[in-house]
Image 1: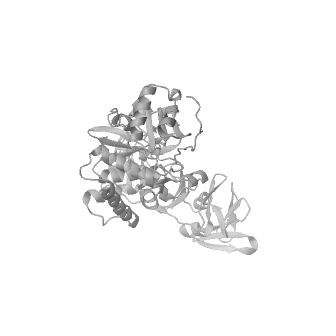
Image 2: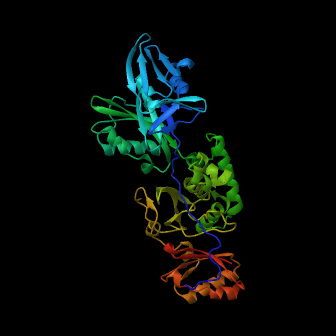
Length: 474
């Protein structure tokens, strides 16, 4: 490509974000604990406010200022920790019975004394498990009996890992939020290897703990489903009584959006295009929080996208699923990876399935009026250039008819075709013209004719060489 008078006027960066926030959660017997100072990971040890964790564990808590000591007391004994010292001692109320070496000493943050949650919990005979997937500490007290959802609790529900996985799948399909499964012949390590988000894209996060008995393992699960699930179910049933206030706000907003952009005479492709363009034009990628690693939970949801108008990949994908479903399209969310965990969509248009990624078609930073179409209705192989789903789905995407560039005759295989298509788009009043190469190196395209057509002395453009796409600003 010959040099032109104006070097890129703007540069776009596409970023993704993990489906799970990095904030640490602490669950006690399946219930999430809320702290006034957030749990912190200090030298690979989770630290929490001592009074709140102590009282949650059923202890009375005391601060001995002259000794810089915190004490947690229960009927069967007490434990003490000294600020800045790597020792925790146990006492029967009269004499010290044991000393435990701590990896991280208690410390003060925002006027709150932070203590290691594992050491304190185990000190009161509780089991502690770290769930890396959800960044959660799961504490189970020795006297806790988890709820059981299976009717025949005396009989194991699974005799193999595949049967156990099938039972999990059944509960997820039924959208159960709490359930207990029993299994023989498999270990807790086998259970931990089952990724629930692979079984159902409706799962946003989960917590679990295991109890091992003679001959079987019992697993208790708590499941959080993505916000879109309840909204879509309410749409299908026309019953919004079970929606939270945020879900109801999203439900109403989605209806309002569709009334403004969808007409009765539109086909599936036109509906999909309108929804894609609405999100790309009206929702900003939460770039600043991405850079600071401070993405709020809302940005992962349709509430962030449709109400706050700021989102990351799962917020975009779930919003597309809600709007698409309510517009009469068959669509689902796909979970996987690019360079990081990511979410996009699969949609059915005129009997064939396509892949679409609105997040990657939203410029960062936003440019008013600009929508990209690089990831609009791709095949599995095309999306697979930089997107890898967690699991290969049984639904295959192989059709190219409704790819944006194919359907709109925006493919060029020569300089002459490039000039002709560009001229047609310019005459149609397009301000941002996107064209895709069909076998020609876009580096060989010459731009001089554009100056003659537009009367401009410089132009700006965006090049996506990996996909053979040029987007030119006129």
